[in-house]
Image (cartoon, rainbow, N blue to C red):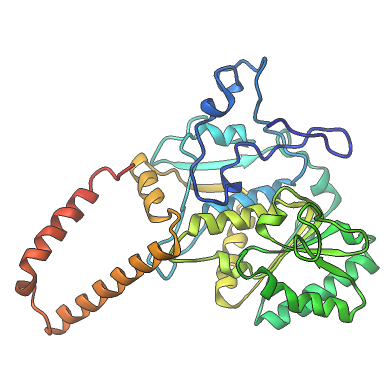
Length: 362
């Protein structure tokens, strides 16, 4: 639980109690139950693990970007009719404990919030070393081939001109199901350039991530717990929207971005990547402050339901019901079916929906 030492001897911010690194979608226990009554939550740090609010590993812009995308702070309308914040800490005090300052103290439910990282919680040595547009770069490509060619060329430049070593670089595909398929063509392009690479846990043992003289490619689960100076995230468009499990999918993007100790390149294709770029540009235009309306308890409860993790079978079940309801609405509008034909069913449905309009289920 305690933060380890960085190469310069300073403590790193730990991954302990980091809800967005939880890729399973299961909620974490409260800070008190994790850290105990003797933690900093009641002002006493003696004999207990603490949350380290100062982050040396990730720069201020990079960490704010990861949080903004992970929580959906600047998320626009999506095909499912949603948009905006999609998950949130249950306890607003946790924002202070991970290094944000509110400016106004409290974060009342339903009120506008502005969260910012300060020099005290995010030392500026990385920002003063490199401009923001070098630390973070979002890149949209027309297709996967164009994306792969650019990533391969950039890696070659990192090794030839930027004085990076092979084990300073990691390439991450956020979706673990498609990692081998999607990363294979980029590895082939690197090989054409004379650059060796390996797939973590596939071309190497389960315990080996980095390998001397070889660039590591990884799915998000293998990458978690490892860091590199330069991180390339490919196919990030897959994280913009999904009808199911969106919170966990956004968590993958958060985890991938925070693997970087210096530079990150978030790459993707098509219109969905363009929408993700828009989110980042809004954040950047706000000087990497998180500005949003803090959700109420009922809204938080609804988020947990709407964006909960589902198995493939559960997703198919919900998707099937949505399709059937959509067809029923079309038939009602077209006069092929009449409301009177469904009196018994509609009354039951009306009762269930009325219950759901009250306090959401836990």
